[in-house]
Image (cartoon, rainbow, N blue to C red):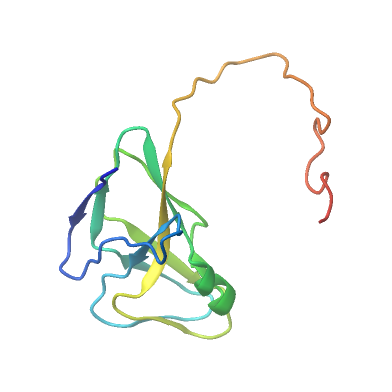
Length: 145
């Protein structure tokens, strides 16, 4: 499937997979200077890209695991959602949960984008739902491990 991408900046890099088996595509910071994110602070990074997703698809934006695990830097909004009718620039908000400043260099990969199919659904108001073994058991009800 082809996805149309518009470069809004000469600094923009097209999304790319880190390996042949990667499900998501890396997004890079389209900045011309390093940006330091202080502990507890956040910053918004342009990608310099706009995307034309086919109807019935969405792009989910996730943190990169290395940033999160090694540096405690993640997306400000946990997961970003890009709808098929959005044509603006993709921007990435990062927050530093760690104790040390984190530096994003020009062109650094700052997030990853996963394209998914989105089914068109109809919600039906119902006075009852089917039963299951779990029923209304909530957090932790399926075990600890």
